Length: 75
Image (cartoon, rainbow, N blue to C red; front, side, top):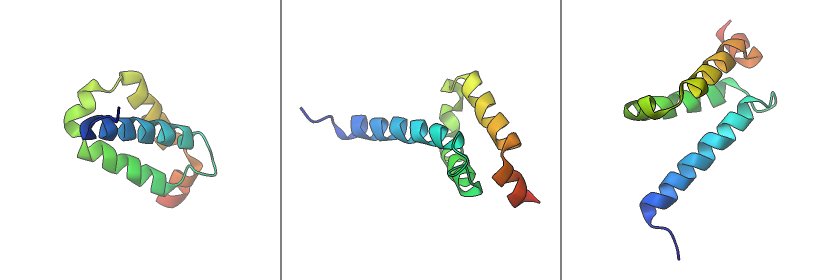
């Protein structure tokens, strides 16, 4: 049985977020462009932020602050 459209979209969102979190730990993939994509997703889904666990938000914030490519782009 093929999942309905909304279930497939939810699955894609889950996979996308999982892969982006993995990419944040890979210095070859951890680029300012990745941060822009993540920021866009967060902005587009502001109403859902309350459902995101605090530890996930803290993890992302720490990665943004500590990322060498992000710092290099900002300077």
